[in-house]
Length: 218
Image (cartoon, rainbow, N blue to C red; front, side, top):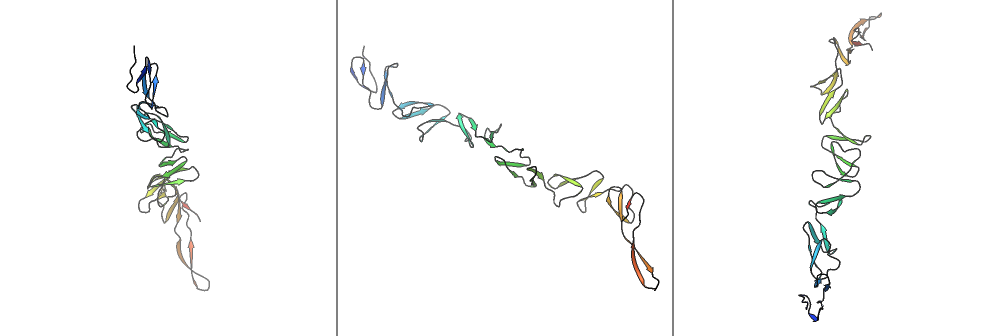
């Protein structure tokens, strides 16, 4: 029984001489093409020509088939079709599967642009102490705190004055002839009074009138 080979002539009984670029496979009893380096994740169809398996693509630089990740495996390494292994300080997004930078503490109200670097969203400011993005209210309001950009919530016993946009204290009783400077207290306006002195010289003084439990005595 003689052997025949597509890629080499039979030179004597049971002996086949393969063409250049091919080698004899004793198990298959035929000449097969040689790919150097080895055709990983694919099969060699001709000398140095590799056909990749599904989910792999040929990369000429390394001369073998590498797995394909869609989208591209940025900040990581594609270890299998559609599977990206992220670099240190990056993690895989559960929805997009893309590698994203890690910010500690978490980058709230901002975007983590690189490991440990948080870029604030519009309407927020960076708190250098906590390294977190906080809402911005302009002008900055006292006696309250900023809930969201441009939205201020007043402290208890204070209310938002629409005309000034400031948190003003609330006095339980109406503050007559004065203004409320703290909850349940008031600062009187100066009362102007003319007094005639011993030599008849007209003098002007300011008197502070105290209102029990409401007006602050200065």
